[in-house]
Length: 485
Image (cartoon, rainbow, N blue to C red; front, side):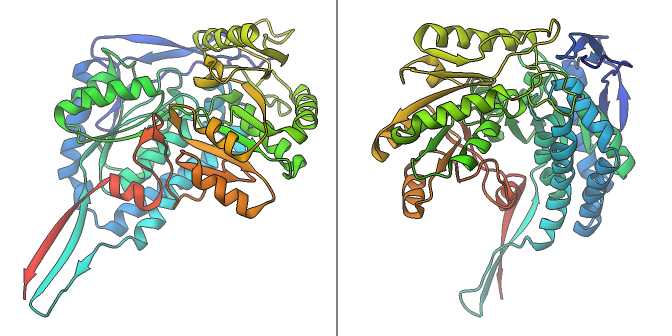
């Protein structure tokens, strides 16, 4: 039995240290994707509300926050991470209610990672230096680092806390102030995070949260605002293009992590036990609603049939249902509209290929936006299901014969976010990784992260990189100072 909502959860705007209502009295309803019940209402920010948030953020730059030393600032940043862990169960529950993701995944992985984002960047700032050059005894050149200013953070609905904190932590660590626009489908954890921000002692106006939609709503108002110095956006590629066009009017600094159509390449010499275990995760984790999912699976022909047989059997064992049930691996998709979009791709696959398993809503689940894990074969590489990001529990499996062939097919996409390569041949692993047109390659693993490494994509999958020094560079400005000695 899917857990019902025991209480309502309203999401107010958070501006200049206070939770407030929309200045126009505008609200929209937040829906639980597992039950289709109303979770509560969400205040929709007007253009005036967004302006108030940006003005508050600008004032905070000149206030106590802007006068803190680096040790004082990063102590507060680290405190945010501590408080997230103290409220771990509450955050995990809200993430599950909002998105339908399994509670165990939120509790065991995502909320600890959100806290670690603050801990990591607080610690990382201890070791960040700047350049200094001295050509001779008569001159010295050195650089100082300062905040960019007010940063707009626009986050997606699939990993709300992980991706919001991934942006907010380095932005605050570098002394910026932020205005957050969470995805309209998952507003709750950002609202709770605002409470944590207050409790941590972050000064008023440093963090502001405005809820709403994209066009002609909070998202567009934030991107177009002349008082915003930079925008960091994670989401769908078409939206990224719109943001880029609107932000260009004020020459805002931009960081984009966009869509992906990621290849998962399995060679015949791979450890199939490990490859199948991890491929189940990279295919259906978070209902396939992860931009890094390996949705195009290529298997070398000598092991293709064995892999497919075992992969299908393991997929049949995955539990689809109540996201609060600890046995559940696949919860509901985020919304009815998104379910219908993914089902549209399933119908294309049914017409142009062959569905081995899934492709329909599970029996017995009469409420909620559920879809069985779906495996498709015999798809032409030109089909939309092979070319476009489905963002659901739908994967294609195709055989290949040569290394050169699979590299060409893997690169034959407008996206370039990530790829996975399975082989026990170390030379081949490096050789293939060097030729894949993606920002990240995992060899014999998936989604294994070190937060110091560059994170992001090429082609239509993004602009710039996040992580470690890459985040520090984005959220700071350098001034070079030259002294004649």
